[in-house]
Each structure stands twice: as C-alpha cells, then as structure tokens.
Image (tube, rainbow, N blue to C red; front, side, top):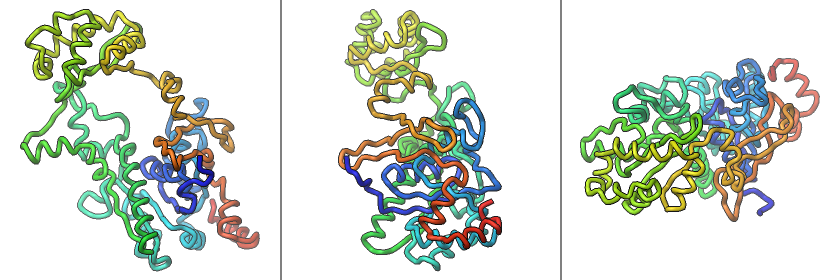
Length: 405
C-alpha cells in the first residue's frame, strides 16, 4: 500500500452542508485531500439532526449520516454573518486550490463569496457550486433535497406499482447519486489546472447529474416516443424478476432470470420442470405475459424455505438470487466484511464509532479513511494556528469579535 495518498497535495475549502455536497468531498478526503469544512455556529447543519444516532442518542455529534459524510475532514465553526469572518475566509482561500459549496444560488453571493468575487482574490481558484437545479434558470431558486430532485427528474414516475401512486426510490435519491459526479468534476478541474494553471467555475445541478441514470428511459422517449411508467418489481428485459416471500417474519428473497438457461435452472430448483417445458414460457416475453402464474409457483417454493437456504440453492444452479437483508444483516455480510466496507474510527466525543469505508479499491493508489467526522469547531485551533499561522493575539481578537460563535 502506498504510504502517501494520491490526493495528498489537494487542498479544499468546503462550504458544503447536509448530504450531497459533503458526500462528494468525503470521497476526495479518503484519497488524501485536505478538506477544511466550514460550519455555522448559529445554524446547525441539518445532517447533524438526522438519524441514525450513535447509541440511539440524539446530539450534534451523534448523527451517523453526518459522520459518514464528513469522515477525514477538518471542521471549523465560522459565523459567516460576522463581518470579520471574511478575514479568515480570505486567508483560507489563499491556502485552498478548490472551493466547494452547496447552498441555494443566493447564499454565496450574499456573503460576497461567489466565484467572481473569489477569483479577484485568487485568479486560479477552482470553485464548484452544486444545488438542486443549478445556478441559473427558472427553477434555480428552488431549495430542497434529493427527493424533490428525484421527482423533478422523473425517477418517481418510474418507481412503484402500475396501479398505485408513485412510491419513489429510497430516501433523497439524487443526494446519493450526484456526489459521484461532483467528485469527478473536481478531479477533472484539478487535472486541467495542473496542465494549464487555470482555475474554473463548475455549476453542477444535482438533478441534471442524476439524469444520467435515466438515460434508457429518456432515449426510449426521444427515439421511440414511448413514455415509460411504473412496473413494480418486474423488468422490461428479464423474467421472472421479483422479490418473493421466504419462511419467517418479513423475510424475502430477490430472484431474476437474465437468460433462458437460468429460467430452466430455476424451474429445476423449485421442482417445476413442467414450467421449463411449457412453450408459452420459453421466452422472456412469454414469461412476462404469464408473470402471475410464475410468481405464484416461485412463491409456493420460497415461502417454505429460509431466505438464506433458498439463496444457496438458486445460486448453486446459476440463478441470480439474494436474500433481502436488513441493516443488521448487511453489517454482518461476509462480502461487506471482506471489502472492509464498514470501518471503525475514533471520534473526539463518541469514542469508537463506525463509518463506511472507501467504495472503490484501487490497487496502486488505495484510499484510506483517516479520521472520524469532526465535532462542531473541533479543529479551530489546528486550522488557525497550524494552517493559517495565526498568532495568539489575532486569534483572541477574532474570538472576542464572535467570529467562531
């Protein structure tokens, strides 16, 4: 393993908050970027108020979501409404290569920290703004979370049952999708800077970034004029394709047949070779047309089996299947353990706690979770003294002015 992480020379001043923005800079922190995250001492980050909480106890440091999104970052408290906070921001700007923010379009302009203002102070700065709908246009002032962006983008129209209202994908869906694009956009800008010395401004709409995951549906409309709708657990290509009840309370198993061979294997496992030889069911289309009959046959078999046993039987015959796991089962999952997906870190007030590890494992330049998420203002002394080089007198004056809350 390389001792020096590949982004060890990258410095990011992070105004992000809640979920989508902080999750993107968390990726870069895992690869060694130094990220200084600014938080308001007067308006707590919404993520700090969201469950799950460490030991089921709510508190500003206890949110699992916050700590997961901000592991490995330095955290400072700064009242941006205080006129003297600008002194600190301007000095941090000179330190940084990249500035990131995820407020609605008016916030950074109101503070005087918009791109045009910052580039006058540091012409080669890279700045990324990511909000729900982008910085301009008729919907740009809409402030909200990924559940709204998922609705605007069209995800909600596709998820749920055809005879019921839209169910929507889990959670604030685009909050979980867009950070991957945000991190890559920053890396591309850094590469451009290294080759040209030029900074740039990136206006990333969370909704537009997430639209990449709807490309097949969009292409289907633009090329064929077809508007896709909700199909429940079925699939437009594969059949059978569903989630079936297993023995026990609220136990389920997901099963899909991508090929005719897998279909025949499934029929063998559930002791329904008659279905495998039925000409009506020889193709995926035929199986979709007779989905109710097939789903009943599969359910009759799965309901008498434990989800794990059914999974083992099906996988042994080459049929894609996996039991539906709850949080506790996912935490104990052997594949997750093998990939070191959950990592124990030491938090300044919580002690030992758990965050997710890096999602991608690069053989030459692996990532590493370097620390827990910061408590509010935890790294004020380190940032002011070690990074900005402030002396005691200056720090005392700023504290007296209420800059840090």
